[in-house]
Amino acid sequence: MGWALMNFLVFDSFFALLAAVAPDVQTAQVSAIPFQSIFMMFSGFVLTRSSAPWFLTWLFEVSPLSYAIQSIFCRMAQDRGAEGQQLLDLFGFECGQARKGVGIMLAMSVCFRVLQVLSLKYRNNIQK
Image 1 (cartoon, helix red, strand yellow):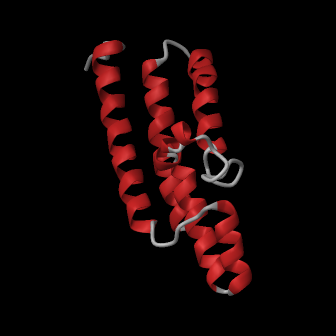
Image 2 (image 1 turned 30 degrees about the vertical axis):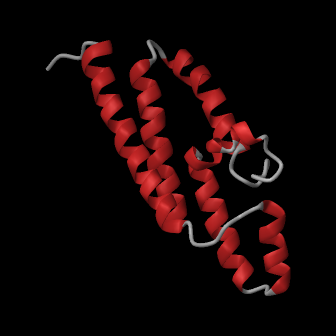
């Protein structure tokens, strides 16, 4: 439940930012597609850290889904013993990254909300 809520906060903030920046609904929807694709592709499940080129590994650090999936895998691997460790090694997951993930996800949510407010105020010229 916790990771689902954290991902909801990040993506809600991000899509609100896109809606504030875009001039209309269609543009907002189309502009969300590449970002959503990148977040999903670099979640650590579709493309692993070990299989990604070195110059793209930073995308795992900013993908909110990667922290959630990594934390869920680590918790599940604890119950599986050696088999669980093999699974963690296969996907390149590191346990103990949950606090870092929560911090990054909260920072992303706050940044996206601040940028949303600035976009509404200065780009779209919203008045009281």
